[in-house]
Image (cartoon, rainbow, N blue to C red; front, side):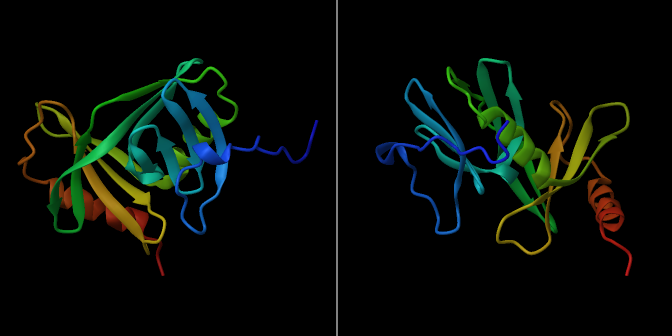
Length: 169
């Protein structure tokens, strides 16, 4: 068992345009390119990089990596309202460490998450994510399908969550 595993070298012609402090953690060839997990996010063919904080959900089936990106639909005072964007699915024939890195990094970006029922109809997820280069947490709200985005009380739920997530002095 090796203490330090090296990531197989990503061919230069498949390397995405990384930022200066970004490094490759794992990669896998796919039908139309390569999926590359880095310290900043996951690079997807034809899409570019999705930051870890921009992924609502990632699922590994054992063959396919399915990523549900977050789409900002509205900015509110102190938080953004997001929704699920189109689901992206990639068949990873040689997955290597990509599924593990995606799961670990998306999970690590979440500092706070809680789901709240909103009366008889629907609910909302309040979340705080760590974003590289941003001081503090970035707050989002994601309404369950069919839930009225104008439901009263959401601002208070975010304020309560912020209070719970902020360490006492």
